[in-house]
Image (cartoon, rainbow, N blue to C red; front, top):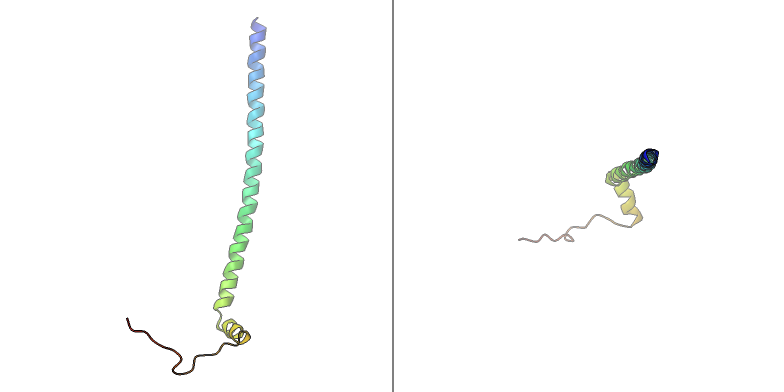
Length: 83
């Protein structure tokens, strides 16, 4: 009967060991996936910073305004409101 108990204990330890290894593999996969996602998001942030810098550039603003047929306001077209 003792060997049956030892067999059960060994089986339990083997099962727990296998489950812990599976969990480690899952977590490793998740970490890898999250690292890739962080890299992609960091690239997006940098790309958006460059877009913002370009949009703030006066030459780019002038070019966009010309494409949209915008012009500076003439005298009297701007109305200031008093509070």
